[in-house]
Every structure is written in structure tokens, then in C-alpha cells.
Image (cartoon, rainbow, N blue to C red; front, side, top):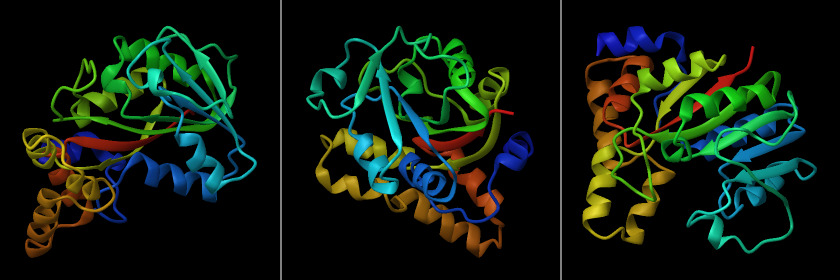
Length: 233
């Protein structure tokens, strides 16, 4: 535990240790910052456009994804700007976007190091990458990787970005039981509120008088997914 706290350093949040999703982090950024253009990398069906327009009506939303995937094939909408790419080289000039959004995409990217470097390229200086990815999640939809929080930090830094914060999302045990039971809708509640193991870890942390950094680190050890905010210098 001490090792993970030390390795993640200031990217472990001190303000609270509640479970967080990519959507929750993105909303805070859009509502409280001057975000003009956002790129959803791995946009799939493109449904995140509704969220971003709800948060900021005049935002420019752009979606990009590979040409064919189960999620892309579900896309029916024509009310937004969509592009395709090869999974690495984004078809946009340098410094094009104020925010990149990548929700549960990086575990499906064949060359994550190269992809993250190109994401950094299209961000404006000081702009942000927000999203989530898998840690201890069962295989799904052609996923290649599960990232440890520390391994993810190393990838981010090698791409020329700074990991501002990394937060636990739904716990791994809940995702495993959900898969075993055939993914019942009942489990959907635990993407937006603390899942069972995360609640237990919160109670244990409070009983041991741990600060939020240590509770976050505890939850990251057992999370199925984690959320993140990164910044381009």
C-alpha cells in the first residue's frame, strides 16, 4: 500500500475518496472551465454528445473511432461530427482541442503508447484528457489490456502528459459477479454510486482513520475500472 501511495504521489486525490466515473469528472471540467472543443476518442455510437451539449449548449463536440467495431456499428445518429482513424493517428492538426474524452477505450487500443502520444499532440497546451479505463475487469469487446494505476501513470508521462488525478471507479469484484450472473440491469446502479467493495473499503478506512489518499489507494488496488484527468504542459 505504501508503495502505491508513494508511486502515484500527488495524483492521488486528497479531497474525497468516493468512487468516480469518467462522466462525473468530465462534467466538472466542462461546467467549471472554458471548454470550447471536445474530442471523444473511441466515441462508438456517439451518445456522449448528448451529455456534453447538456453541460454546455454551445460546445463543439467531435467524435472519432475506428471504422468498424460493435459499438460503431450501433451508431445511427447524424446530428454530430464523426471521423474515423486507424486507432493511433488522429486526423486533426496539432493543438486542436481543449478537452479529450476517452471513456473505457484504452483497454481496446492495440498500441496505447503511440495512441496516447497522438492524443497529446492534438491537445492545446494546458488542455486536458479525461476518461477511464480497465484495471481488473473481465475480458469484453475485444479488450487487449488491463492497466495497473502505476503502469498507466508511466504511459501518460511517456506520452508527454501529466497525471493530475486518478480515482477508483467500480470495484473488480462487482464486475466479476455481474459477468457471472449474465450482466443483470440491477448492477447498473453501481457505476454512479459506490459499489459494494468500495463501500466496505470506505468503512474500513474510516475505522482506521485513514486519509482520502490512502482510501483512494486502497480502492485502486481492487478496482475494476479507474478514472483519470491528465494535462498537457
